[in-house]
Image (cartoon, rainbow, N blue to C red; front, side):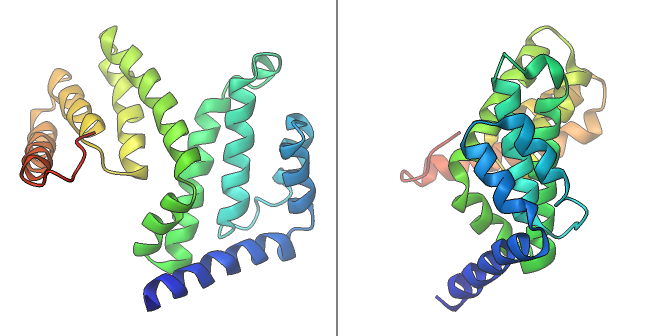
Amino acid sequence: MKKVVCLLLVLNAALMHAQNVCPAYPKAEKAFLAGKLKVADKLIEKCLSDNNNAVAFLLKSKIQFAIYKDKSISADYPGAMKDALKYAEKAMDAVIVAGGESSKTTFFNNHADYFNLLIKQNTKEALDAFNTKRYAKALPLFKKNLSFKLDTLSLVYTADCYWLIEQKDESLPLFKRAAEMIYAAVLDSSTKIY
């Protein structure tokens, strides 16, 4: 219970930090919620100089992902999906710096809807690359998923990519870890296999 309270205090402090350190944050958030993505993107840029501002990085990620999904402006931002992933990862890194490794899970769970949507889209692109035998392109995409959460699908495909690009020493420990996770999930009927 103490851990949860401490973690909530850290996350609340991060939000307060984002709003206090960067006066543009509330304006960027308001523009994002109103669907003014270009305005929100320009405003949030003012908040990104502080590498410990997890909330600002997360908002930047959400803005970039929304731009990627909006076909009317996505052509103006060709790297939007890549940027969405990059800033989501920076948000996670900032949370770890502020609250330790255990805070990563809480932060992920607090924003699970968004992270799962981002991972789902990234997985789709990774599978497209894998299925067209572009293993070197698929590999970093699957690995990016693993930086957010450990899931057997990304783990197996990461191992498979390493295997198919002749890096068998890299693939074997990943295959072993995936097998252990699947076996443990089978033993525990309350666990989902992803």
